Image 1: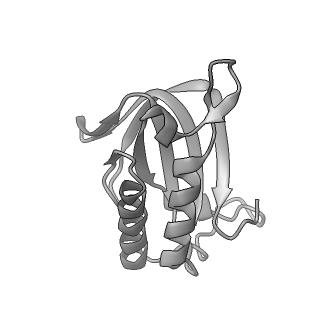
Image 2: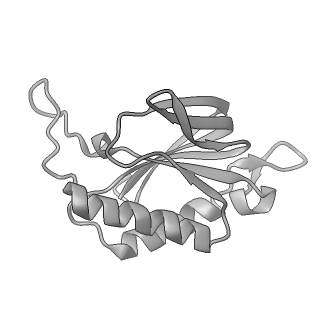
Length: 149
């Protein structure tokens, strides 16, 4: 399971011109589910992200987590995080999970993040979405549940 995590001042997702998810201060999480991912990946990544110290403390150092600041998360499914561009000019998505499995694990991740105590908004799975954000920092991190990066 892969995630691109961005610290934001605000973010929202629109489908067909209508807002379907919106947060203020917190994390925008683009989540990609791989073919070999399981619920263990959901658990690992949700715990990691909820406790990730990327928000400034009183000295301006990144020492506070989403939980520490009472921030929110906006989770957007993005299978293209599994795009392999090493060969040719068109990305290959053979390592991405199929739609049904990906949906189940996406919902698992969202549920686990909520269980960690994080208020969560979402995009719409398998829809074309417009994502609007004000990146804070900018702070953008890549996470992988198999710890390949």
